[in-house]
Length: 337
Ligand code: FES
Ligand SMILES: [Fe+2]
Image (cartoon, rainbow, N blue to C red):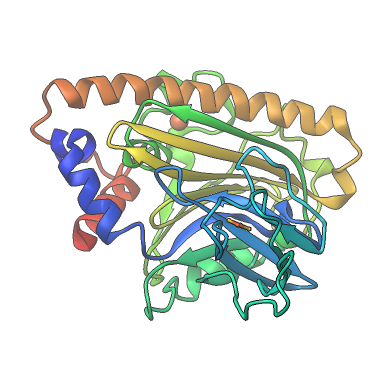
């Protein structure tokens, strides 16, 4: 990978044609009410509606079938209404995307909102504009994720920020533990470089690594952690192309990336906590503090890297084993272009 991969508008346009109409993760089922809808971003401000009806999920383009008006704004919170009403001429759709009322029409036109492919992997919502390729995440990595049962967790915090960096730099930085001591000196006391291990799985489009062991201390109080399995291990997942997850026994920090341009990305971050911790605001506030601090340190170094690669970067080298996950992601990306 060289500077152009992170700073060329032409290459970004290629990605928008090849990678991003394919399967991407837009968020989690934890964000939706049991019946209702929410607006999610795909890329370049393109938005969709994900509708949950009982326990099934469908994705639709956020465009009215009459004159194409955007049905709901991205700023809207989720809606638990069973109807979606267009702001232009009040056409009304039900939770199956069916037009059920068009004012002043004797016969309601037989129209449906246009669907995208949508599938759920545990609590991750995946959509694709491409037919008919199935989502391929294999078994190993999703099985490891399944142990956490995150779909039962409670979303206590969500934030969306715009970062002046290419989306791949943010993924690469997540995959990298070589930078821990320099960029995160405080975190490095809890989560040491030498305690990080890349776990190789056979799952396509997936990268998994772990910290084993994490050192106990704020914000990781192991006696508070629920679930089965070892409490002093943190697992980290990347699912190509745009989602990464910090998975701990009692919480998850999930980041989805929405590329805007070759040098701008919207990052949506969510903190999910075990239901038994949802009321323990003091506890999850300390987690939030930790993730916000660490994430800001990461964003800061990604901004500097974006500037550097835009100056001149002929490509570098990978320092094994600390950057083997970085190398795996780059190899995966280059195979998709
Ligand atoms: S554009 Fe939606 S009702 Fe006319
Ligand atoms: Fe980092």
